[in-house]
Length: 367
Image (cartoon, rainbow, N blue to C red):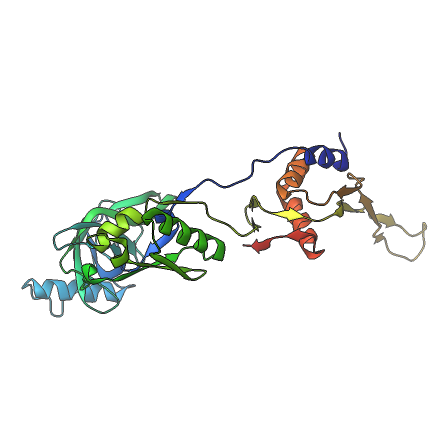
């Protein structure tokens, strides 16, 4: 097997393509006024095959069921409910920008009681409220559960999440957002990942597109466009032209690792300084072999078990001390470590140690 030094030294000569692919502005920013709004509601799913809430364990299910029947003209005073065919759920949805009355939206349903499954259930008409407390949509329809469950006398099996599901086009918009988009005179573009270089490039690209100074970078996350200076008839026409302009974004050098799954994501601009790396493993072995001690014949004594334990520590030879030349990209280092069969866990430890030594020039994010 090649040594770590030999592999890394060979990889230094590999040419990595430089430069990022141009991206549309619509994929880099959020336009002021063009946004969705979250909706939430509380309702009932009925028609379950004995997999709903236990009424005695979830009194709020019984309460909302009684209120619903009362509104429908059914007198349920002092009645006792014992059915497990009903489940209390939270209903969530997103009201898209510029949604008009009568439009349909998708809704998500999730049980909040002790229901086993929502499979085959039907959501009863549920009003959906926004953060201001007003009702903007109403949801109703058959729930498509995201899993399945089966139960027997001695065992049960669950696949996926049967207590949550979706209703495609299950919500209908009943109220529109009070926002007059046509009155905008200045349009703000908010970068999803703030960066001064990217914002400056957006400003330059927009001004070049219109042939005059119409855009101004305010900070690393905001670029303002004067709609009147663009000569477009409306803000909608201006956005339709702006969002398709190509810009080459600039990203921070960043390394992201997930210790639970061993996933490592490395940015193309990550670099490391000259550093030496050595990684090895210690193996601790403890063995026990008890010894039985017996008294001499005809002696007044007892048989005693004497413990005997042996502990040894072994260190793998590993790959020795390897030197990484200055200016090497981290992707080349990772490729060398992969070629040597280093596990993701050990690789994460090596990266953290290089960062602690001050040789990793990037933001190091651990999740």
